[in-house]
Image (cartoon, rainbow, N blue to C red; front, top):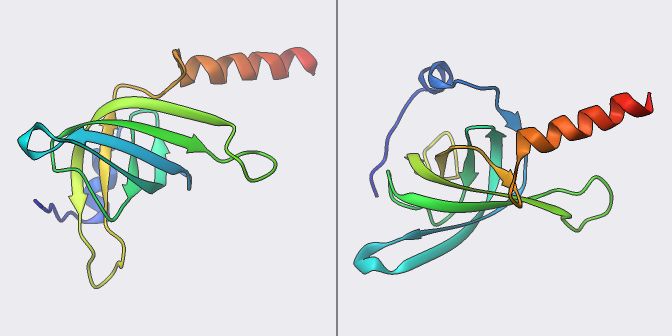
Length: 134
């Protein structure tokens, strides 16, 4: 596994959009060695329009193309009621260190979609609906 160690300050200055802390189940897949299709799961640390950081015991290799699905936590109850999907590329892989007992990876995406609808369009529709009821 190729490991890139970067300081939090360096990572933060490369970000182009606001990240939101979100603990959501993540299911992801990629083409591994010998063209074997690999799948794994993890938990997101944070998410933004352009990607996510996922804690996982089994990380895809750096620069690999991945398909990822995030099961969003419900507003009520315990069963996820919505999922967002994307295709992207692994930008960074981090192993466990003395400071952190968790390993994970950063994935960059073109944009998450709910079904076939981009998340930003869904959020805009929700916002319009709230304005109409006020």
